[in-house]
Image (cartoon, rainbow, N blue to C red; front, side, top):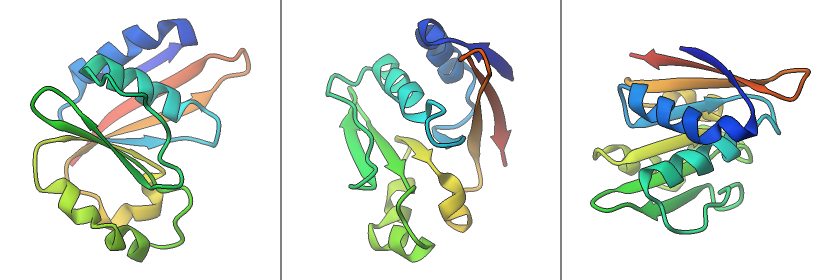
Length: 137
């Protein structure tokens, strides 16, 4: 699924992503500044997160409580190798059916679960973004 959107369209785009993802593991690809965290914030709000949502660039993972489950937001931009992800207990976050949003998944490619949804974002010349969403098995 491919969609082009602006910031004003974020609530609609978040709803579309959540309605069409076959998994609860979303992998966000795109250059620095393309809007990965901005989209994740809107997705988290759509899921019902009440807390202030921030990028886990330095903490690597943020945890948010939903009604009966959790949302884990990972940002692997600053890690040097997959061993660092293992040190935070990365695999433990994938033993349940909670939501997992992963920025910079290419840094932990060998650790990712078999089933996930790949979301690639690109920035267009006019300032809009293009989202390309595909299931990964």
